[in-house]
Image 1 (cartoon, rainbow, N blue to C red):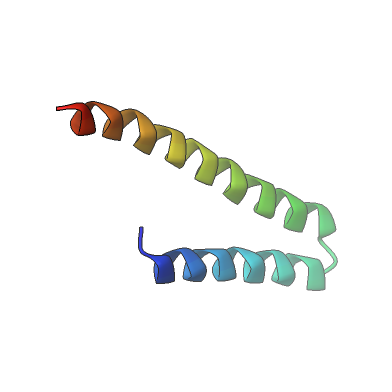
Image 2: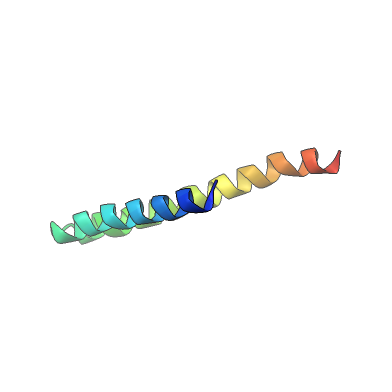
Length: 57
């Protein structure tokens, strides 16, 4: 993922959470940020598993 795409994804996640918070849905805002963080960790773990065998060759 490119540097600018990462920034755009973080900004988008923050704006989604802000929108929920402005509407008074604080728990939904918190869950939105937690879910994005969880997805990012899962994706990075998956990428690490797929990249290791390729770099070893």
